[in-house]
Length: 273
Length: 290
Image 1 (cartoon, rainbow over the protein chains, first blue to last red):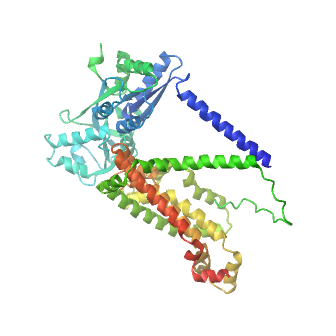
Image 2: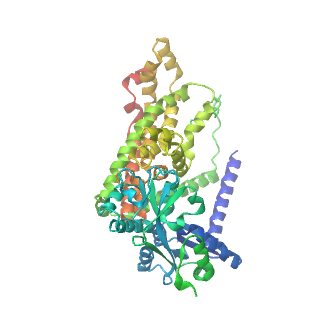
Image 3: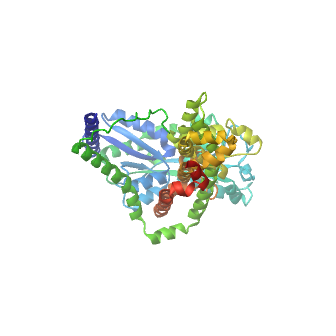
C-alpha cells in the first residue's frame, strides 16, 4: 500500500514539474506563436472575425482575444498582462497606458460608434420616448463611469438636458433612476435583454442580431449623441510585434474596415485609401 | 459532506505492529506540504506588503469603502441569520432521519458550493428575476429583488447555505443516540429534546458552520454582481467595491482587499481561539453528556 502511495506521489510530482516546465518553455516564446489581442467588449464580434481572417492569412498563427471593459484591460496591461495589441473604446484608457510608457506605437484611430438607448421588448416601464427615462421608478442600468460607454452615456444624458423638448433637470432625474453600474457594455446589454432593467445606454453596434430579438432601440438626437472613438496601439514588450503590426494593418485596410462596418461600427474615413 | 457513505474502520484486535519509518514518503509529504503552504501564504504576504498602515487608514476613510463595509456587514449578518433559521431544521432532519430522496436533497444542498457563482447568479435571475419563474409572481406583489439590497441577501443565502448545513448536520449526527433515547424515555417531547439536548450538544459545529457561512456571504461576488447588480450604497458590497476599484483606483483596491483579508482572518482565528466545547455548550448539555 505504501509503495503505491509513494509511486503515485512521485508520479504526480513528475507530472506537475514537467507540466510547469513545458508551459514555461512554451510561453517564453519558444515555438508557439499566439497573438494576444486585448480589445473593448463592444468589439467582440468584429474582432473575432478579424482574428480568424488573420489566422487564415498567416499559417501557424493563433489569435487569442481578451474582451472586457477598456478600463479593465488597461489595468491588466499595467499589471503585466501579456498583451500584444490594445484596442480601447476611448482615448482615456489608451492615453493612460501611453502616459505610463506601456505602448510600443502611436495609437491609431480605427472606428467610431454611437450610443443608443435599448429597452426590453416587454417594455415593463412603458418607455415610448427618451423623455420617459426621467420618470421616477424607471430602472436604468449604465456602465460605470470608468468604463468608456459609461462616461459617454453620462455625457449624452447631460447633453439631452440641454436639448429642446427635454426638461432642464432631465440629467439628474435620469441618474436618480440608476440601479446598477456594470463593468462593461455587454453586461448592460444582458441586464436589459433579460428584462431586469427597464433601459440602458449601449453602442449601436451592441445591438447584434441575437440581441435585437429581445430589445427595442431608441436613437438619440444627433445633436446630443456622443461619438465614441476607438484607438488601437501595439503594447510594449509584446511577444509578437510583427503579427501585432499585421493585425493593425488588416484592421485599417479596406477589408478590415468593411468587417467593422458589417458589425455596426463606423469605419474611419481617413483609413480608406 | 459528512461522509456517511464511508465505512468506519473495523475495530482492531491486538496491538498493531509499529509501522516501519519510510524516509521517502516523509520527505515527499514535507516537500508537498511546504509547496502548498508557500503557495497559499504568498498572495497574502504580497497583499500586505503592498500597503502601509497609513495608506490603509486613508483609504478606509473614503465614502465608497464605508458604504461597502456597512452594506457587507448588514447583508452577511442578515443572510447568516436566515441560513441558521432555515438551515438548522434541515441539518437536523438530514442527521437523524432516513427518507426517500435523501440523496437528492444532499446533492441539492451541496450544489451551490461547487457551482460557479456566476452561474448561480444567472440561475437566480431565471428564478427570482422580474421575468423569472417565481419572480413574476413576486413582482405582481411589488417585490422586486434584482438591484436591491434584499437581492444581495438572496444571493448570499443561496451561496452560503451549504457552509452551515454541512457542519451543523455533522454536529447533530455526532450527538449520541442514547442521549436522545434517554430523553424520549423520560417522555420529553421531540421539540424539547431538540432544543435542550441536540442543539446544545451540536453547538460547537453549528457555530463553526455559522461562521463559515458568514465568511462565505462576506466574500460573495459572482452571484451578487450577476443577480443584484452593482450600485454604491445599495448593492455594492466589499468584494464588488474591490473589483471596481481594481479597474480604476489600485491603492483603494489594495486597501479594501487587506481589510477583507483581515476580517476573514479575524473570523477564523476567533473560531479557533474560542474554546468550542466548554464555551458554547451549556452546562445542562455537559451534564447530559455525563
